[in-house]
Image 1 (cartoon, rainbow, N blue to C red):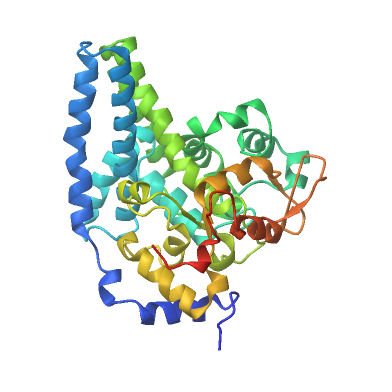
Image 2 (cartoon, rainbow, N blue to C red):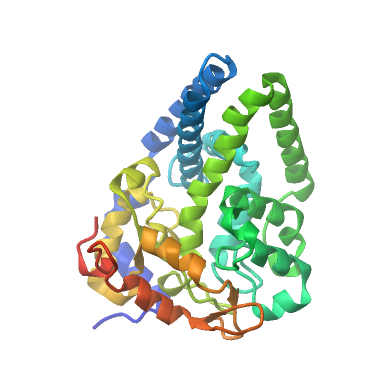
Length: 364
């Protein structure tokens, strides 16, 4: 008998029983490899700072550097979920290496992502990363700002916002969301993390002043922008087209994965397997393809995987506010509703180029 998608506890139990025990053990080699990128990234920054490279080579170095810091950030993401090292000290070392370029400290990340987001993904008021509701847009300032920078709002800034939204969401949590009554369960030393963040910004600013404008552009600013874009093309497609809830965190309906290029899967440490990550946050993404296979065997309808480019196009074409029911997306006037069920149907239907709905094939 197929286990229904709303029976979260039973689905998780069946999946845990099906997975090998090694899937839930730390994978330190991933952390060692990520930390080895730190001197490589520093060497690339030095090469840019020498001023000997032509602009086109500096631009290429900026992109390569952005992918290095993105990979380190994704490894830090795993580490702070306890799936890399057993040592909290090593988790913090990798956390600083991976998230400092995005102006986020390890303590800040644990509160924002591990505690707040993962305890209530796509739950209204409790998830700091959820799209606002239309009624909130009408009455509150922050939802207006969030909507303006969200893909699908069709404001001019929404078309360039992926350059900064990831880091912006982090700062929004640190200075705005963490004080909300709905997030009082989140444990974070606010004064300490805010002070560390200011010092981190001053540190990057001082480095940029010492390097000069040209080197700062190619070694600091562009990698920051490219890195934000890389993270957001995953994050926005993972949650921002799924149904929202008033109280229930159900990864079998509120989180999607994307089927992307194998090179991106390798470079970005299987971050495209995001639904699988939300099912078992402390499991290494190394085992996410196997988890997807087991989930499809237990209940194919519970596995949500969208073609990546198709999902990005759809993201910019649908409204960016939730309606009253949490299962409909609407524009600022509450018009042009599109249900999340309809979005899923479109995204899993055959698309141009011969890409079929991911569920019909084998897991990669």
